Image (cartoon, rainbow, N blue to C red):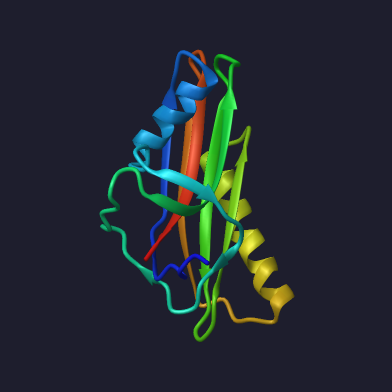
Length: 152
C-alpha cells in the first residue's frame, strides 16, 4: 500500500519537440517535473494536504500526479492545458485537468467550472482554488501540459 501524500503543488509547461514524445518530455521539463516518474492519478486531493510550491522532489521518484496534456502537429494551432485544485474548509480537495485546442483563458475557465460542479455534486463548500495553466502556439510539434504532483 502506498502512503497518502501530504503535499502538492500545481505546475504547467509548454514546448516543441522533434516528435510527439519529445514535445511531451520537453513540456514536462518546462513544468519542472521532467526528471520524475509520474504515476497518473485522478481527482481527489487527500485531506490536510498542504500546498508547497517550492517542494524539491528527488529525481527518479515515483510521484502520484494528476495531469492533462495535448500534443499537436498542426502549425499555427493554439493549444492549452490547465489543472485546478479545489479546496474545502474541512475535508479533502478535488483536482480537475483540462486540455484542448483553445486559449489559456478558456482552459482556466473550464477548470473553474468543473471544480464548481464537482463541489456542488459532493455537497461541499469550495473555499479556495489553485490553478496552473499554459497555452502554446504550435510551430511544428507542440505540447501544452498542466499537472498536480503529490508528495509525502
